[in-house]
Image 1: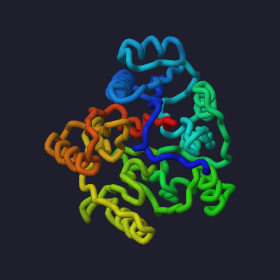
Image 2 (image 1 turned 90 degrees about the vertical axis):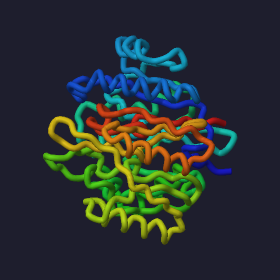
Image 3 (image 1 turned 45 degrees about the vertical axis):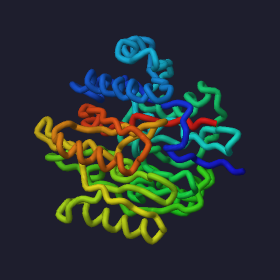
Length: 336
């Protein structure tokens, strides 16, 4: 049996989370961000083991003051805290587990001094006792989604951004990723959310060139949920085109009309509900809390898509202001 990347809803051995470690990046949201990450860790730890990665002993002491005894803390030098993007990506053949370590270049070389983050996927997997295979292609874990049954979806504008895989063509990129993750059907979408791709002084900007985990998630083999905005929304045309592409590939897509958002620092920020994380027995969902009625409706719809799992909201604002939410800060380790 060949190696494949399991779906997120398959059983986990643990969840990996990085503890925010760079005040210069977070600014006045640093302490709030640490609290949000700790709350997410504590929430997930009620369902499965959580390992919180800290950059040094001082950060570990700060983390221990915020997390429960159910959360393990370890120290590995790092520069950031978004383990979805630079943490190890796991594959399994049913009996064995290996980590794939893709190249990480700080979201298209947008950030300096990220050498330790570029090595973290390898060093963390080795620390956990797993064998690691390096894959020579730039990929962040939040850029793509897999259904565990051989299908992968990714926005081309992200993966083929000139600052990522400039030396490779589309077919080479797809071939390398497919071979590493056990993919049979590789689906290219045109782009992700405009908020993640364009700089607008009046709006937030995530800066990942269109990560898929802001607007799309698989819910089963060949089944998915995707943000479906109003027709006058800036993302409406691109997401409608994406839906057509997915349908032609046999993907059953459930429309999700809700987007969580809030105002801060005279800008509009989004905290996408679809940036949820599926752990053992639960779905952990980011909510901004600015629109309680919308939060309730969104959580109810997600509950219908995940029968048998508890849907739990976690309030997040500091994270979204810095570029991520629940899915972005987590990385699953599949259970054998």
